[in-house]
Length: 413
Image 1: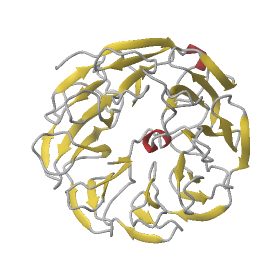
Image 2: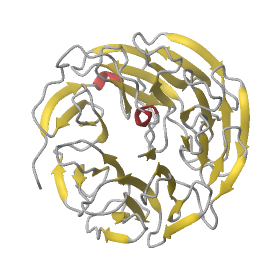
Image 3: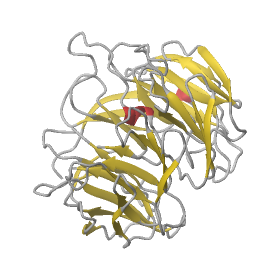
Image 4: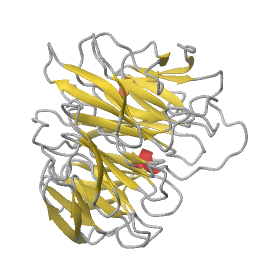
């Protein structure tokens, strides 16, 4: 291990209730990110029925409760699937709103106060599995939106909640939007199907089973063109026209993937992956793997501890090293959250178990990592720092990664 992380802050978030998911965003325009704890409904089988939000609680980085909408429920649901909530500048006024589904309605809340600004009817009774923000109409200021049920239907709506189109198929967990043809409007990678901004099917991946767990866009092989890498029954890379460039089949279930510069001296991007090898509480097992830009295996973890619910995602700008790391958490088997490099070496282990979010909290140019549970949130950094702004910095636009928060992290490089 290179070094242990520095604990920067430890704050009480217990007023938010049990089993919350944390979102990060600048809610009050002060240039720092705040923490939004999202609690979802219980009493459902979230393998099949999507969650709704029952309580939202906003804290600053010192742990001051800024506002709360709803009442914490001791019987709240757990994170077996996404919670329908995001933080984004919904209307282009340079201030972030909170978007969520509560009581079968889509709500737009003022980020600073939590007051409800807009309320919309859902386009379908179960159109609240997750919230995907997009530009489908070419309006660069105001966002459009995609809603979905668990495994079948997408609804695309403009900023005023007019239905643009509906798609039925196998959309996977969290479709990713990206303007792959440069026309100023987003295409939608809906599971194994690439849809144009108007919902027209452009192409589909072939010979893939089950559903897409995560989707990444990036110029993987350095040819100047964006590719799409999809983790599902296997890991595949497609070019922008729908031609398969390679597939990696030496995994049971490619539950998570992440693109990044994890290794030195290698062309293009590398693909970190998480193979869910055996499902099951007692004997479940997963393991990480690393591929090069051509889809060739660099290494595979031979895990000796129990655990099959690991989440991985890339962390950029953690330290001065210039490389990305794999953030691995929810590992089970008494394995703590950690950062792993491109050589499968654990470079940082965090002394707290819990769910994890990461971002540049106070515009330092480096990312910090927050590990949280129902009681507290602990902020870690690679070096000593303060959570106050070093000078009068203005609020920065919400990153797409942060307004596309999901249990099944996808992304773009």
